[in-house]
Image 1: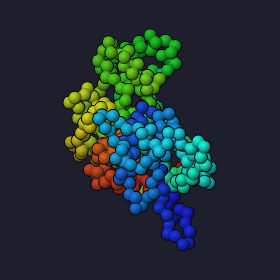
Image 2: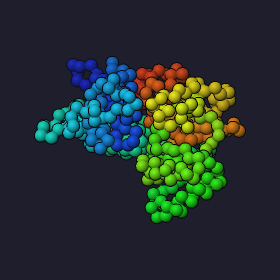
Image 3: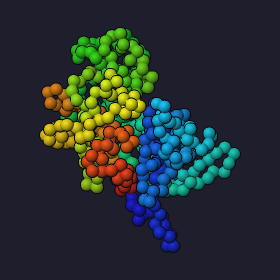
Image 4: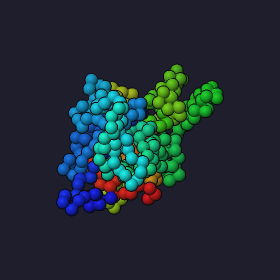
Length: 385
């Protein structure tokens, strides 16, 4: 879809495409999504696009929010929330379910619903379940509204680390040793499930990383150095997801690479390296978002290593049928091999996040990055493609 196709009258110039920035959500990554939205709202080119901010509260209500990016920041080490930004404690935004009608409606109890106008594209800056995992993408497909980022399948694959690894393996990408404990296994026989993890540690050694299978932003992850910390790590992961993933520690350097969809296809950015944070056991939530541990951009790699990780990042993008953008995370092991850890189909997107930093170093500024993503979404139709 292009600007020329937008509704217009003979007396008026073509209107600007309307972008609904949807953020917040029901996952444990709610606050980081709000921070990301603030950065996007601040940087999006208002001369090109009309913008409608829509926040989803942690209980799932779609709220009309203030267009005030300065209120969407981490303050005193606490992330912001949609509830604090919502214009009403009860009002709700309703997306159309008819592909022939893109008009968004706002409704409050006891009041006449108010039309907010048509939306031409949705920029869903949600992280985690109920937003980044294909659920919102499915709703937008049914509504016939174009959106930034990957479709239903790729979003679901990118959220579920078990199936992500299975897809990568089937396409010849190397992944590290891992083990999955499903909810039914744990419910039926905790002892047997725990023994599987202990046996896995016996084969691959400690430490292990115990994490929710379908979460991001390093939330719920514990580095476990021995048996004494295992039960607590399992409980922490299960607070965020009943399915847990256990990974063997890989010795090597953490390397990230961004992928962006251009008119002719996906391209990879220069890579970045995440050095071990001084004040943290690993690159956890606080290291990423609270203490803002800096990455090294571009990563100090050989030209051959740089070319290889960029190729592998695009391969991962294509293997999962991604669209728009992806951040691909790798380990460069001590024997010089790249092992893919995961992809993020909607990575952290503040100006200090690694994905925008890598593209800045590649020659694509933050405002241009947003513009390219919106234009790529407008070029695509919904449905099978």
